[in-house]
Image 1 (cartoon, helix red, strand yellow):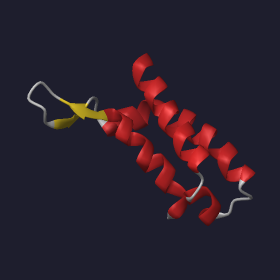
Image 2 (tube, helix red, strand yellow; image 1 turned 90 degrees about the vertical axis):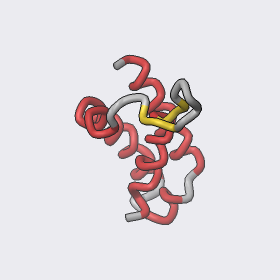
Image 3 (cartoon, helix red, strand yellow; image 1 turned 180 degrees about the vertical axis):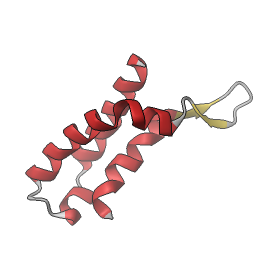
Image 4 (cartoon, helix red, strand yellow; image 1 turned 90 degrees about the horizontal axis):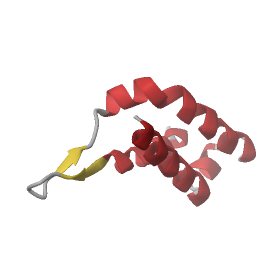
Length: 79
């Protein structure tokens, strides 16, 4: 399951404080996935191939985590 950690971690970009300082989802994560899941997986596939599909390499690749987070941030701004 380590290969999916960078995708899960990227969804932190969808969390932020509300007016009272409570952390809330900025948008529904399931709806976000329905809209952008294919695009995220396509970007993620590149990192998997670069790591030779080695789960441990992907799960510990800082660049992969950063790229997925930026992808989620960009996609959420477009939505």
